[in-house]
Image 1: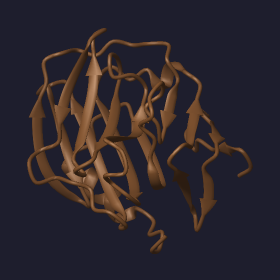
Image 2: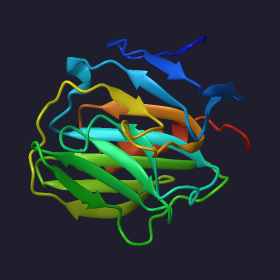
Image 3: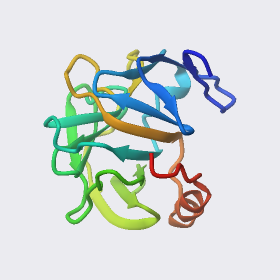
Length: 195
């Protein structure tokens, strides 16, 4: 693997690893590490979007927030974990719109959490999934626009919001996966042990 996180899609958006270490098949982020991916057209997803990420948070309330996936909160997408384990998804049209995870959805410390975020433009809602279960939808009003910003994983760029924990998988789709597709994706997710 070396110093790159390989993109296995046809787009080859390989990420440069800064500090994160491969351990037992997953990347360990120690609280000041990240992965940097150059901007590309394939990452400028402004319509339907699915984010699927497996995360093992080590210390959820270590800081006020921990970055998971960041393109830009004012533009295409961002997913961040709050210090109570809840999630916030951002996107925007040049100014941000905040979409909080449904009540009762929170990450659990020191276990693998399989998280799905599906933005559907036809119903103007973000649909949330956790460990294969549909958790609900939250409406939004803004239509996202593209930016030239890179993607960072494990860090909200320009802040101290770094992840303390593991990331096993991250999948981005420029389509809104269905509930059945999300269920199957969750079943196919590789186990990573206890980290």
